Image 1 (cartoon, rainbow, N blue to C red):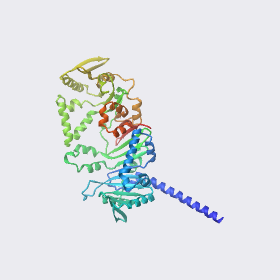
Image 2: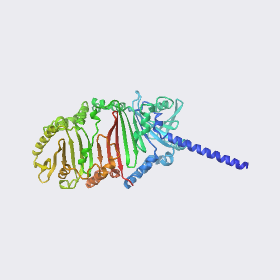
Image 3: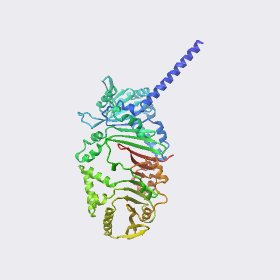
Length: 540
């Protein structure tokens, strides 16, 4: 009986110890998978931090997507990484690194004034979810005589300076459940100070919400946080050559931005990126107006790519302002002004000045008429409050067209719409335009699309399965969409033999795994802009 009692008690102790160990390791794994916990030992001075989440659920979901070509490409890339980066050191990623590796945070910390190096130091914080496995890995590396290791103490913490056979030096320190790594010793020392109580990045305004919510994406893979956007841009642009520096107008625009947080995640349709930008003060109302998107109803379901929005005139004015003080932008601006001046047009007043309404531009599949050879044409709808100015530009362009050899103009009436067509000998109508109503101008490239853009299509882009698949989950109150049907685009591109020559096979494989892409931007309040991008992926 005593012996059985002893065995039972021993088994109970072992079971309790196993449960305690499991709970401890699970708690540690959860801790080092949280970006906010990592940010608690990142120095407050960090101007950017990005966190790679060890999210197995997201990875499992990601594996539902892809084509045989992309899966083969990923397998080859992993094998090459293992062979080229780890094999020589006798390291196996799955056996030696993955068991202890938690989340990874990269932080950009401004360099000390006396440092004659880059303007920022890169600090890496690696979560340790199992110290025993890390210890095994470290012991395995000790046998590498090519590495030179110097140990020293800072604030009671051991810093190891490791120099590999190539001459690269890294400074490492274990801080609780984290491994701090940086090429510059000062970055690790600052991290030790933060670990021991100095103010951290996590104490920055908006840090808790930004890092915990990861911009609101599901099954998050990565989070990027820029707490002070103007300082971030300043650190990376101050050392640029004078002719590459940002203009005063551009700097003024950037100073309006307070912070940015981005999240990348996986959901049922594919990969989604959301970026939330906080502003210091509200922008003028005309810069935050939403677009109804009704102009997209004019485009057929065969549209492969489209962009819509509002107020091109305002965007042009902002570009002109930003060009002041920037030589490159100023040269581009002057080139555009000269190009239009050669055809007697004032680009500011006669070209973009009247484009103050909504607009949409689309690339449309068509194999009819003159588009048989290209397989694609274009359409555009522009709304304006100044039809007189728009007609003035059109009259001047008509005169330029008629001066070209073999080009003539043809006027015809289609219902209530007066259409002007540019025709070329031996080709026919290659461009046409007309007013759909008092303030909506359409332009079509390719004779078949002139008829398409004049009539409301039975199967519009809006409401089509392909379009709704990508924009259906994006915010509806927005400033416009960018839409690309990659699947149709690749079918069109592959009809040209030269594509397979100029485009690498790996690139074609990646693009072939994408069904479509959608992007939009919206305002949740007068200080918060949200940009969202969705890659709809092919499913297995």
